[in-house]
Image (cartoon, rainbow, N blue to C red; front, side, top):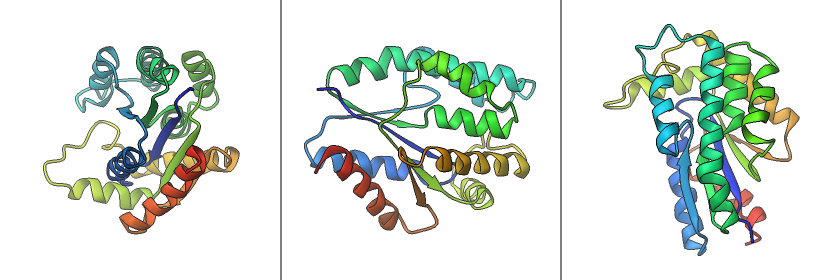
Length: 208
């Protein structure tokens, strides 16, 4: 039996990392084999691309270059890690997937429909079985990031407020278009309240 493919999405500072740990713990408690990964990254090649993308010194990077690098990292990640594990019956939980590119490059960088087209080539149209979008106003998210101890802002986190607002609007548009796949969760709630909604989605998916 094929494993389930799960993604967690959200603007920077929305609490993805915390909820991913809680998802992992819950599924293991329910005797499910679950593998954690992230984007960009998840394989040796994709992690090298991640370094290029997020390095604050790469301010000269153009929007189309950024889009293509994300898609390249995703293609490698999908074929090398995600698909083989799903085929072996293991479920995969990823911190970000194609929705991030549509939100950040399609809306944030204002590249539009070409982002979805490029990512269709990269993924063959494969999308998660369920996506949890942690919705948080961008000004709140960035303030959270800045307040974190020992956190160095990456190249995208350093973008202006207008960019982050466009990303947020992009995510909301995706939720409207793909509401059957994407579970939209108010991330201004406390951690346990957020996870309660995630757990309900997991229970439906796995049939608990």
